[in-house]
Each structure stands twice: as structure tokens, then as C-alpha cells.
Length: 280
Image (cartoon, rainbow, N blue to C red; front, side):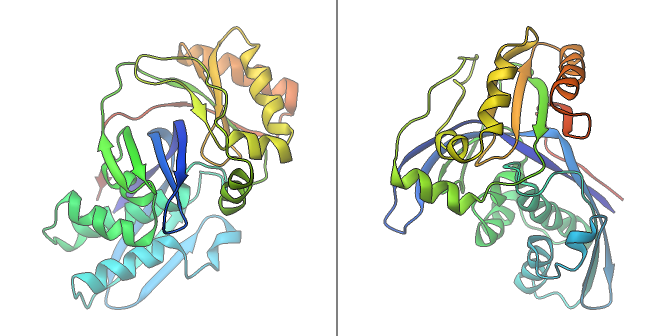
């Protein structure tokens, strides 16, 4: 069966302080988008087999997707195995949650393939054992995420959101971003206020200080007539611009590629408001 694993963007990311466990206390509004990976899963007699369309990831046998499969099989004491093929579309290290979404997609698909009766809350509890962002993708709808990101409050956005997502071809280390923030903790400048939120990402200052491409692109986006506002997603290195229409996103993409280079990753997107679906 095939399972779509959507990427996410952070419409805001507030760092509220340091927790006793060493992590940062967060409040962030995350939203799944139309860009995503696709996983093809089948049950096999035993073991976990993994392949990927990205050769750089094909040898990563101990990744989040395979860890999710092993956790599911162990938790429910299943003797079957699973074969996973990952068609990778989401850039790696991009602040888009690609690996986390892949793990959640495995849990969702295995629930359906095996017929195990467990609700989303149970799957989210399993997901939290694997990583802070992963429970969000179990529900796969816009949500305010708190704590380390594992406390999920699904919500319905009042506006239909679309835009252009770009990636420079390099990643930003999430641990580095938080460590650098901790050395000089301060709020980022707020952006445009929409119906449900004000754009702001407190990880922009450390990322922008090291990678000047990021603030350059954000500033350029804000100068374009098609753009409502722009923000870095997560700890980077993706930057997105919100637009008023799909046509505006397509026009902006053409202008961006002409300005910054035709080989860069640039894809129009829309925010997904309903849960991901699986197909046999």
C-alpha cells in the first residue's frame, strides 16, 4: 500500500525558555503541506527491508522509518515483517520534518496493513518515543505544538494558505540552531498578522547569522508584489513565501528561479487541512 508523508512548515515558532531536561520549551504552529514523500509498504514473513529513491539514503538501514516499523512490530508483538520503499521528494535537513513524517507514515500504514486496533492517540504515544515532531504527523492537520513539540492541539485555519517553498541545497543542523540560540536568546522580529497567527520564527537569528542566503531570500520575497510575507521553516534551511493564489505562487517561482538560479529547489505548495490518506 502507498502512504503519503506530507512535509510541514512552521507558521510561527516561539522559544519560551529552557526545560529541566535540557530541551527548549516551544510553542509552534505547524501545518502539513502538499509537498511530501511517498512510502510503499508490504508485509513480508519476517525482517525489515528498506529501499529509497535517494541513493544517499538507501544504505541508512537504521533510519526513522525503519525504527518506526520495528517499534510498531515490537509494541504489538507481531511476528510479521515489512518491506518499505521510500520515494523521497522532501529535501533533507530542510526544516520540513521529512524524516519525522516518514516515520509517522509507517505507523499509520502498519496500523491499516496489520488490522491492529489502536487509535490515533496510541499511535501518537508511540511516535513520541521516536522524536518530538513525529506525533504531529499522526494527526496531519494544522496544530499548535507545545512542550518539546510533542503536545498536539489540532486546529482549523480560517484561511486557505498557499505559497512558494524554496531550499538552497544545504541543510541547517537543528541541534546547532538551538545551541546557538541559547547563547543569545531573543525573539525574532514578528511578521505579518494573518487570521490565526503572526509569522515569527525565533530560530531565524542564529540561522541568518551563519547563512546569509537565507535572509537574502526572505528579504527578496518580501519585495515581490505576489508575496504576503515570508518566513524560514523550523531550524532551516527552507524559506517559504505566502501568496494570495496558486497563480501568484507559479509566477513567483518563475521570478525566483530567474533571480537565484534555475537549478534551485522551488515548489508551489498549499496547506493540507485534512488528514493524510493511505491507498492499497
